[in-house]
Every structure is written in structure tokens, then in C-alpha cells.
Image 1 (cartoon, rainbow, N blue to C red):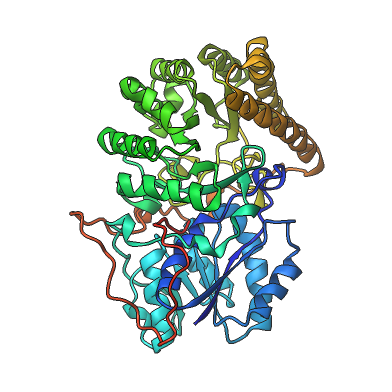
Image 2 (cartoon, rainbow, N blue to C red):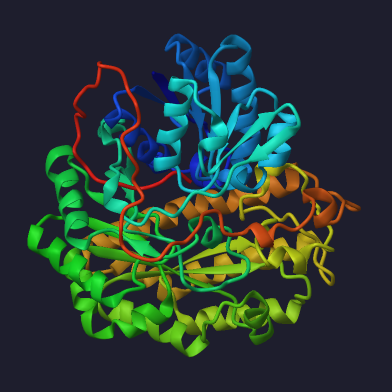
Length: 526
């Protein structure tokens, strides 16, 4: 079958401000298994330019696909753009199937199928195996009700099949790297880059996280095979930067150490960046030299907040002493630390923001990333936020970088003032400026200057955006805006014990099967 994967241009600051763009890993992860099943697969990546929506539609229509698949890592904020493109494509290709996957449609399938008739089917949870089975059902004319992990429209309304089992063997599927031109994708200031995933899920129970339930349980790739794949991407495609999409890749110290040692043995000059928890860094104090030797240059640490009541409310499970020690250890080993800091909790006051700023200064991170609290309907935190007032009803701005909720004691302009002041003070303090100017490691100096340049552009963009886009004074409550809580449905897949693969029999295909151009390994659709 002719299949087109569509990556729409995302309006978020992170997509539009930098000159760099990363490959859409979720779509490539679905594309690889479909190519191996003998289907003709194409990718239309609208991020470059960005492409006008009409141009995306024109390119998709020109490929005459049987199936058009949409998905975006920006999930909630990306939905309005996907909706507009899907509607236009369906208008010109009435016989093509429109399939939609990702985090947002996994949980909002009822509304999407009820309100958007141009969407035929939704893939819920991980995409690789479910998409293969769905396409086989389309091709064979078999019943959709037999395909686990989807939602579709019936005469009686939207219907979901039973959740699919989680993928036990992440190495059973490969990423369709041949769908992209690696020369077009970069990060870290123009260096050729890809996004990868060593693990899926997270064992921790932070109640605001929109990803944990989607992945259902923590699993990891074969550490040695994964290292070999990264080395091959470097040798065959000139990839320099590896951006890890994992929520928490370092959960298993044993497996992580095997990966680090295997990558070191490959002897490739890579830059690794990603996220992890501060307590894992402290736990791994004795092997951090392996992190550095393998190529790690920066870790994003989810500190979120330091107020004890807030940490208890969001079930973060962190400790300020551990956070501070993790940053110190990373600096000691020549690895940059980026601290995420979330504001906008309902009870915050000027005193809380002042205390938070002082705490961040005491942590002394190399970089910070400021975010606004943003509730998702399928997380337990949604119930805590259900009564709060929504001040931003444009769903394209539910991207963690825009204020979307009112706070009890502070107007939005004052929240923004503290937000921007915190960024300015932490990033422009003398100690931080000295490191940017005189960092002895050439690679780290380049990284810090690049991030500072991007941060300066984002800083003004956010201020002007706040002035330009008015916020509601008397908006709906979160529950009125998004609907009933779904935390009872948070886990998108069925966890099963054991280490066996969930890859089923090969989907039925025609006699035109072609050998894949790239024998890489795997990842999933977000």
C-alpha cells in the first residue's frame, strides 16, 4: 500500500526559534516496520520552512496515498494543526484512510472521532505493531474490531478495541532512517543530529507527567545493539549529536553501564544529550567518568520545584540536597546541567517565587529551562487542577511555554515578571557569564553559547507574545474546558510479564516486498 507519514509544522517556540530541526522519531519508528512489510512509505516533513499548510496538502495529494498517517511529539499543542491538514487532505483524497496516533489522540479518541469525521482510525499507545496490524486489516478487508490498540467509528459512534500489550522487545522493530535526508537535520548549533530512544516509560509516579502512562512500563533496548546503532549512524550518515527522547534512560544502572562501555568501545566521536533524574546521577557517581567518555555533554534534570508541599502534591519524590549534589557531580565530570523549573501552581505568591529564585542560585546549574504547569486529562494531577480557571483557550499554546491557568494570588503579568526575572538572573549572573565566556572545554563552550543565543531570542519572543496575545479574565474551569478526568485510563497499553517479544506474525503483503535500505533498530510513535 502507498502510505504517507505527515509531520506538521509546530507553532511552539522550540520548533520555530532555532535554526535546527530534529527528525520526527515517532513517525520514523512506525515507518520502518511498514517498509519491512513491503509497503511504499514516504515522509512529508512540514517543519522545514515551515511549509505552508497548503503546500503540505499539495505534496501529500501528489503522492496519491492509500493511507495518510499523522502524529507529532508536540501532541496536545500540535492537534489543531494536524486537524486542519487532515481535513484538507481528506477533502482532496476522499478514498484515502486518515490514521492518527500519538499521546493526545490516545486519550482524546472519543472527541476526535465524534467531531472530526475525516479521521478514520486512531492508534492508541505504542505505534509499531498496532500500525502494522491496522494496515494489514485495511489491505485484507478484515475487521477492525480484531485489531488491538485502536479506536474507530461505528454506526453506534466511536469505539475502542482492547488495549494492545506493551512491546516487550524494543529491538524487534527498527527506525525507518531511510525516510529522511540526514543532512537536513541538525541540533546543537548546526551539527547533524537525530533523536533516539534507549528506553520507554518511567517507574516513578509524578502525577503531572503526560508520558508515563502512555508508555505504561519502563523497558530498555539491548545496550550493545543500541550502541552499535548509534555508531552506525555516525559512520554511515555523519550524525554527530544524539538527542535522547527517554524520560529516564538511566533507571537500570547495570544496563546503562553496559551501554556506556559498548559505546566507548565503538570509538566514535558523538555528543549525547538527554534527560534523567538527579538521584540517578548521584547513584552513578562512581561511573560518571564513563558518561563523559561515552560523549555526554548535557543532562536536563527535572527539578520542577523545591517547595516541600508542592513536591508532595506532584509526587515528584526528589530532594533539594540530591538535586544540588547531582549538579555538582556533573560539573566535576565536565557535563552541563540544565535545571527545569515549573511555575504556575495555584497557591504561589511573590514570596514563593523569591524563594525559588534563591534556591536555583544555590543549585548553580549551567542552564535552566522555565516551564508553566500544564495539566493533562489522563494524569492524576488533572483532578487537583480541575477547578482552576483557564486563561488561554488556544490549544496550540498548551505547550508548557505559555501560561494557561490562573493563579489564586497573582495576576498573569506578575507570574510572567517572575518567570522572566528568574531566567535573567540565573543565566546572566557573573558566574554563569564567566563559564560561557571562558569554559575551557571547546565543545561545552560552543554548546553554552549556542543555548544562550537561543535563550535570548526566546526571552524576547515570550515577552512580546504575552503582550500581543490577550488572556481571558473569566475563562472556563479546567474541567469545563477539557472534560472529565481520565486517570483511570492513564495506562495506554497492557503490561505483561516476561521478556518475550510482542511482535506477531508478519502482516499479509503483496509480492512487491522491497529490501529496506537501512538495517537500523527501533523506537516508537509519540
